Image (cartoon, rainbow, N blue to C red):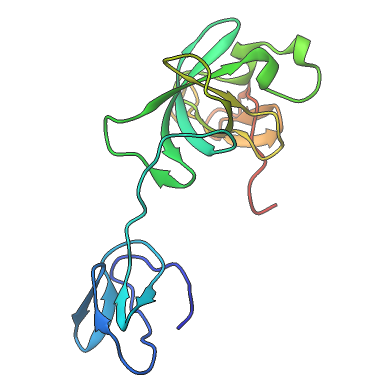
Length: 184
């Protein structure tokens, strides 16, 4: 049995001898299928797919969230995904991206409105627990920054460089601190 990620409804190959089906699996049309996203595991002759449990951010956790508020010195981030596991609805955490945490070079020249806009989806790494209400998040790596943004015309923007995105409808270029796509 390959330890590959399966999606709900996807057929799952069974090891020999055939195990019992546990949580996360069902049988339909003589095929065993996944009912959860996950990796099938064989535990004491029972095949299961366990649901990943959400956990609060910790230092070095990769987080996804959307920008909720901007000020000249920081951007507020509503964290909704921690280490690839979505948080339950309404249980998001608050992150703060300070000007010195936006990029690794020229930290003193960073202008938050040139890097983020409200509603942008951002990938970052937690650097510390911050104060009682929020986590400090950094985007100071090439693979961190804005991964999804909507233009003023309502179109999904495309990254042009590490600091610019273009609207496909109007061709207008807006400044953002873009994350390098994972596949490149």
